[in-house]
Length: 265
Image 1: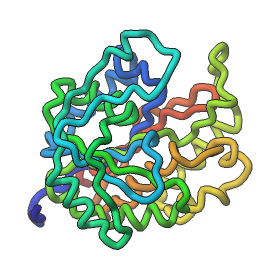
Image 2 (image 1 turned 45 degrees about the vertical axis):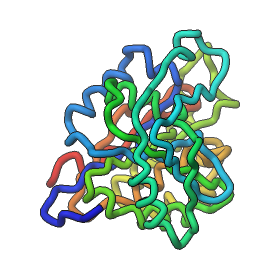
Image 3 (image 1 turned 180 degrees about the vertical axis):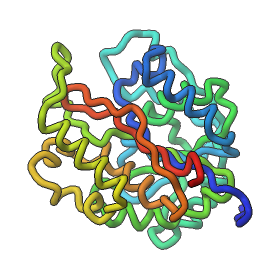
């Protein structure tokens, strides 16, 4: 894959995916993802970093026909019936492995697409006609590791690849209230702190999420939903705009999303 220096780079996205039902309910989140797809150039391929693929080491899906993984329970049958038959892209998978040779990334020829990927893409690209590859998250590694690893993926934005990071900035299901989804004070504080630092390009603060204080400890009890944000931040270029989408906190979960490079300043 070659870099076209004259070509406007693809945007990169961090999307709060939240409840898997967002894939099939035409709620505000689903509709916002539909609208977002209309605002950005149609990608040649998509690389997704999803909170729902945790591994030892770094892995990249390389099957040409990835399955639809239903990695949840307790939801209506309609959600389990969803299929997202997007093709894979073995050539892109190998290219990603080559870019990440320093960390000895490996190909996974069997892994499909989990709901962190397809629940969002079903709204954005319902025809499932754009090739999709997933990159795993080694949650044993610190934020600095993921940020530096993501930097190596920078050429992809200039090669027609949409990098989609899917998680949630604030994600504490243990404290989530289904009966009363009024935002917890600490969740609002954490969301505000994170957004302020994203917009101010204070990446070092966000990389060291384990030092961000008591509100962050509640917001990030485990790192898998937060780490995808670091991949998006690492790919910000100097001329990129930054926009906030779906700025909502429900109980102990934030749907706040970051859209990078949608418009040129």
